[in-house]
Length: 340
Image (cartoon, rainbow, N blue to C red; front, side, top):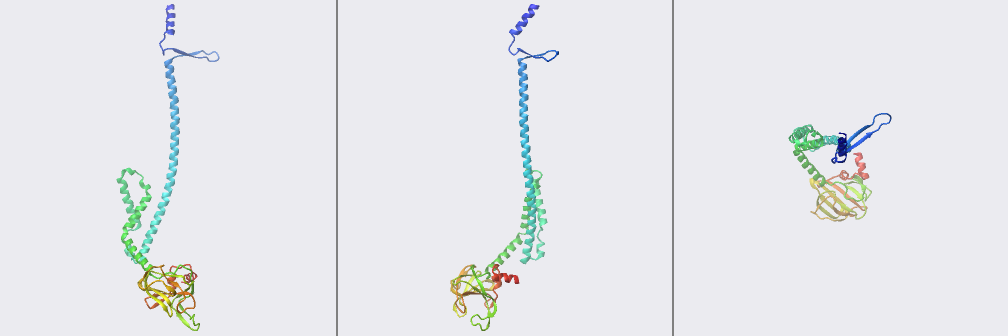
């Protein structure tokens, strides 16, 4: 039996199948403790090595996931900060929009009353609060019908504000159309009235409307029916409003060369003592068109323009209020406005 056992051991050592070879790991502690030995075959070593590599791989993958999650958290934090800032801006703009809506509502009502609308008529239109309630209900129904928008759609406050404004303006569309007609009519009257100075050039006011000493004789008082404006000889003279040239005077004893323009609503304007007229009777002119050149024809003591404003063909009125209707810079108009 002893010989057989030794032979079997020799066969095990020399004819062992691949993968069945054994590896002995010995642990020799210091001191008197026993020696520990561990025998592993190569398949077990390969299995344990695979487990170790898998553990290392999972650890690396875990670190990667952790870093990715940290980056995503930081991105969400940054995005939250941006959204929070945007939300604050939207809330501020929404508040400003509501203020503008209230101001617009008040302005529309004031303009309507100024242009002749009775206050009782305004009560037939929806108030701004009613328009907001209608807009909110309309958008609420739309949100409920659209499931893709999801909950929390109240962040669309600016849209609610614009819808409120649309509802308010749609309700008052007829009123606004009436106001537009009245404003255009008023602007038409304004455009045709003789307003402002008869030119964009520098004038100095030498004599105003009213009683004065006759500048030619210096011996008597006379009524001055217009406003004298001095300037250089040949200075272009412009029409102060839209109209039609009614008459052109040539060498009139008093006015010299003069142009008379007929405006709508019964207004006339006259430009006298011209060096030369540049328009003809019946010609259509607009505010700012050149109609003549400054001169000293007629009964004068020097080069200047005599400017008059008439209501009808017989009533001469003080042209200063009409001149200062657009001239706010000259000393004469500043003094006039201050006194008024």
